[in-house]
Image (tube, rainbow, N blue to C red; front, side, top):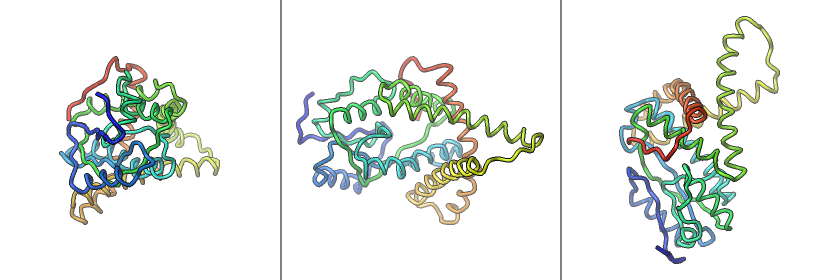
Length: 267
């Protein structure tokens, strides 16, 4: 099917829920953001079974924090998909759909689509709307989802995806080093250089903030009782340690047993 420059295609996942306000924001993007050829908004994971599984809820809160931080930076200021793109809540002009197509043969076809659109000179912008989805339902689904992301991004030919996947894998080294340092610290009383301590603390606080911010924004959107929102902040800080370990396990899973094909997980 061939599209025209007057056609727009909105990509959503099977469980995505979009409201009237976000439809309005999409139309505003189409009517007024003439210099951009594709756009994306924020995705929340609070539509179904929110907080039924604390670990998966907190783990996906990081994705929300990602959307309102580096992806917001990308779509608001860079207007280039330097961090890639999500396959859901992705609005494409017909010219982009025709030029790139989705016959990419990638485990992360959304990321590859964004890279190819960038290569062809298309620019992206921010949609000031929200789509609501849900987190994986079980541990295997969670691990397979993250494994596919890591392996798919690492296999892309562009420099930036390889760089981001390298940092992602480096997180495993960081995790094991942190665990080892706790035990070794009781035996070997060595001081940490101040510059290293500042980098470690900055990295740690950044990640904790993104998890907390993601939960806080989704709770506000869900209309959660303010007292419960406050209670969930320390809960998130504790549970995020488990989420970080599972993310690292998923990366190791991808390194040891990479997926042969696209994994469809249960939601």
